[in-house]
Amino acid sequence: MKEKYIFQLEMQVRDYECDIQGIVNNSVYQNYLEHTRHEFIKTAGLDFAKLHEEGIDPVVYRVEIDYKLPLKSGDKFISKLNYETNGHVKINFLQDIYRKKDDKLIVRAKVIAVILKNGKPIKSNLFINAFDTLTHKNI
Amino acid sequence: MKEKYIFQLEMQVRDYECDIQGIVNNSVYQNYLEHTRHEFIKTAGLDFAKLHEEGIDPVVYRVEIDYKLPLKSGDKFISKLNYETNGHVKINFLQDIYRKKDDKLIVRAKVIAVILKNGKPIKSNLFINAFDTLTHKNI
Amino acid sequence: MKEKYIFQLEMQVRDYECDIQGIVNNSVYQNYLEHTRHEFIKTAGLDFAKLHEEGIDPVVYRVEIDYKLPLKSGDKFISKLNYETNGHVKINFLQDIYRKKDDKLIVRAKVIAVILKNGKPIKSNLFINAFDTLTHKNI
Amino acid sequence: MKEKYIFQLEMQVRDYECDIQGIVNNSVYQNYLEHTRHEFIKTAGLDFAKLHEEGIDPVVYRVEIDYKLPLKSGDKFISKLNYETNGHVKINFLQDIYRKKDDKLIVRAKVIAVILKNGKPIKSNLFINAFDTLTHKNI
Image (spheres, rainbow over the protein chains, first blue to last red):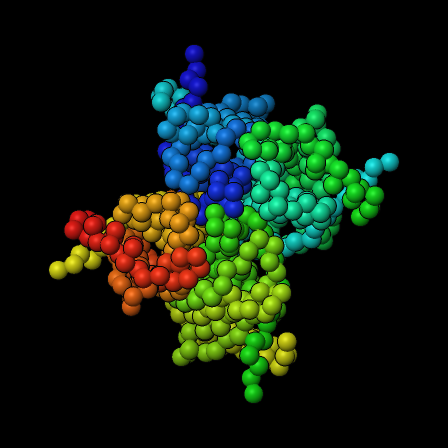
C-alpha cells in the first residue's frame, strides 16, 4: 500500500502573512504549497536551474484549493505532499496543510503541473522517476 | 439574457510580482482576483467594515484556477467578474483575466464564497440582492 | 529652478496589502516605491531587458524610509519621485507618497541606487542622461 | 560588555521571494526583519494581542537598510538582532542578516520603533524592561 504522504515540511505563520481579519490571506497558502513542492522536487534530486538551462520548466496548469480552517499569527503547521500521475503529461500534487497543535486540516489542495520543454508539454516520466525514489520512505 | 461579465477592472503587472522565470507568480493571480472581488463588492454598495461590526464576514470556501498563459512584466490586463448562486449559502464568483493587448485569456477562475455570521454560514441573499442591482449594467 | 518632483503615479491600496492592524504593511511601501522607480525609468526610455543583455543592472544600495502616517484599505495615493546625483556612481531617488484625499505626507524615502555592469559599479551618466530628458516636464 | 546580538533566527529563502533577477526582492528583507523583531518581542514575553487590547501598539518610525550582497534561491541565512534606546520614546533595532554558508553580511539595518498608546508615543520602558531580561543570554 502506498503511503498517504511522501514528503512534509514544518513552517510557521509570520505576522506579515496575515490580513485585516487576523488570519493568513488566502493567496499565501499558494506560497506555502509552492515552497513545499519545490523543496520536495529538490529533495528528489532534480535541479531547477540545470533543467532550465536544458529548456525544461515545470509549470502549474490548474489549482484546486479547499479552505477548511484559517491559520492565525504564530501558528505552526505541517505541509504534506503526495502525487499521482494524470495521463502521460500531467502530475497531480496532492497537498494538505495541518495545524501542528491539534492536527486539524487547514487546507486541502490539488495542484496539477505540466513539464514544458521549450514551451511544449513533455511526458512526466522525467519527474516521476525521480519522485519514485522517495516513495519508499514513509514519513 | 444575462451578460457574460458584470464588472471589470484594468490593472498592470508590477515587476515585484514576477518571479525567477520572469512571469507573474501563480499566487499573485489570487491577489488580483481578490482585489477585483472586493472592488466589485464595494461597487455593489456593501461595506466590509460595517458588516464586520455586525459579525458578518464573507470567506473563500474553495478556489479553482486554470492557468492558460503567463503575464509578464509591464503587461496590462483586464480582470472580469460574474457570479452565480450555488445553493442557498454559496456564491460562485466566475473570474477571468485577459491580457489587454490581444484579449487572450490568461487565467480562468471559480471562487466559491460563503458568508459567515458569527462564524456560521448564512443565506447568501444579503450579498446577492446587492449584486443584482449591478447586473443591468453591461460592460 | 528644478521642480520638486519630476514623475508621479497614482495607485490605490489593495486589501491584501494591509495587515492585522488594518493598515498597509511597512514592507509594501517598498513595493510601491520600486514600482514607481521602474515606471519612471521606463518613461525615461531605458529598457531593463535590453540593458540586462548588455550586463547592466541597476541595484538598490541603501534605503531610508520615514513612516509619517499609515495608509488604509481603499486609500488612493500619489507616489512622487525626483532624483539627484551622489558622486559619480550613485543616484539618490527622492520618493514621497501622499494620500490623495487630503495631500498628507505618508512616507518619505531616499533610495540610493548603483548601476552595475558585470557586477561592478559604473558611472551613473547612462541613467542620468536619460532622466534629464524628463526634467523639463513639470507635473 | 554587552553582546553584539541578543537574538537570532535561522530562515531559508523561498523561491517565490525571488524576483526576475533571481535574487531576493529588496522589500522581502523587511519581511524577514519584521518576523525577527516579532519573534524577539514574543520571546521577551510581550503579548501583541494583549497589548493591543490595552491600546498599545509598537510602530515603525524609520528604517535604514544597507544592501551588501543578495540572497539567492534556497540560501539559508541567520537574522540577528540587538537594540538600543534612542531618547525616552524611541527604540533602535539593530538587525543584520548573514548568509549561513559563509557568514557573509547580506543586509545591515536600523529600524527605529515607537510605542503608541491610543495613538500617542509613550516611554519605551515598557518594552526595554522586557528586552533587558534577555540580554544576559549570549547567543
